[in-house]
Image 1 (cartoon, helix red, strand yellow):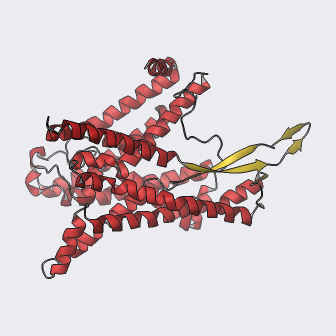
Image 2 (tube, helix red, strand yellow):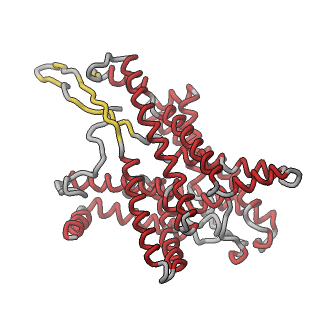
Image 3 (cartoon, helix red, strand yellow):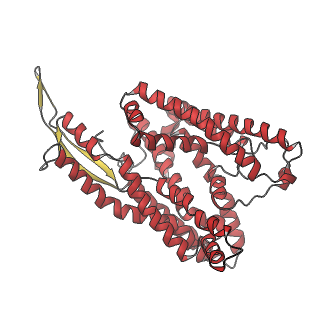
Length: 437
């Protein structure tokens, strides 16, 4: 405990770090306050708190702003959608590949295109949000005027959230966009744990304690999955420039076991609503369609769980393939005079990296699928719906990833000022010593 308080004191003794933490907290408070500001012309008492399907997932990411019909009702999600689209285009379209290789100027152009695409997506999603999710009885003004004004306000709210995220990244600590999503998810945790405790009562106090212990071990497992890397040694040839010798060092290529992050779960989750939706079109005329719709509307059914896990494994391989390019890694190593001991530079190096990546992606995808379906298993054994959502899935992966990245940045400030760091060893566990770009 003494070590913990000493670390806190060291953190706040660094002026730059202290200012950044205070700025981050201030921006997050603004974001949370905006989540409770309801759109003009809406009666909040007539809104439904329980959102079905993908809407419920969005509401979790936005900390209830979606169901509250807030001015931040769409939050940062359109920006994330635009970023994903640009990321996929960078792989498939030569023009965007060229921009990515142009350095800072190319990244600025991609950033500008992302912002413009964000506005377009927000206008589209805002229209659907206002017309489909806000009931007519909750609107107190003329519907046409309300739709037009709300779309403008929602777009402005998303742009403001995007600005807040950029300010957190620039003036605060951590990745701003990820921090906004994380704070929305965490805001649900106190209410979920209180509701779970009250539902268990005194008779179920021991069971509630066991649930907390199980959650702790699940979080530790997700931390291990997030941090696990396969390090490939890279040797750099010595170069004599003038009277000095450069190179000759051994570094590592850290290939993550879960290189795809949370994206496979997001992609799979978006597709899992299709079976129930399509079956609903023929539910009145076909008993089979009605049965399929009912089965895939229940996320605890074995059919839903099996299909969900298979989709996650497939999307993990797909997303890893488009984000990690063995050919580019091999070319960069060759250009910088690096090689893997025992492997020839060039094509053989690329094939070796691809083989290693395939071997670690398979167990990584299975572990990711297990994390994704854990909330269903938790719900089956008696954990409440709200609390079971924190036993895995996208929410837990995002929280763990953002917290680890933020801790790494804080640790960097401590080590730079010659403090011991967050851990007794001086480094956050699982972080790589060197990265080959």
